[in-house]
Amino acid sequence: SSSSSSSSIHPIQTWSEHHLPITSMHALPSSRIVSTSNDKQVVIMELFNGRTIAKIQMNSCITEVISDDMGYRLYLGSIDGTIYCIDLNAFAIATTAESASVVGNCNSTTTNNNNTNNNNSSSS
Image (cartoon, rainbow, N blue to C red):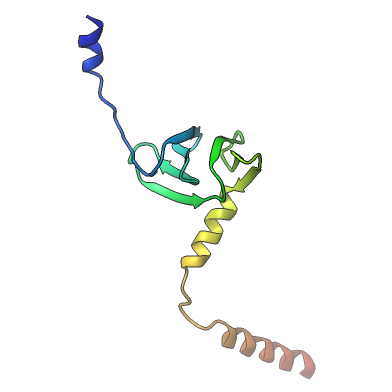
C-alpha cells in the first residue's frame, strides 16, 4: 500500500539550472531558494514560478550555503576551504547598474543650474 501512495505524489516544481550534481540548497525567507553545484554556480530562483533570479559563477565548487535570518547575505563554503559572503542587495544593485543604459545627459542641466546659482549669489 505504501508504493501506491508514493506513486501519487508529484513534485509541484522542478528545476534543472545546474550542469553537474547539486551540492547544497537553502530556502530564503523571501520565497526563494539558493542551490550550489559542482559546476561552481550559485543559482537563486523563485520557489513558486521557478524563475531564475541570478546565477553567480564562483572560482571553486561550493559545498555549503546558508543565509542570515533576513536572507540579505549568503555565506558559501567552498571545497578549497574558502568562505565567501555575498551581499544580495549589493549584487542586485551591481547587476542592475551593468544592464542600465543612459537615457539623457544630466550633466548639462546640472552645470547650467550651478552657473545660475553662482551668478545669483555673486549679485547679492
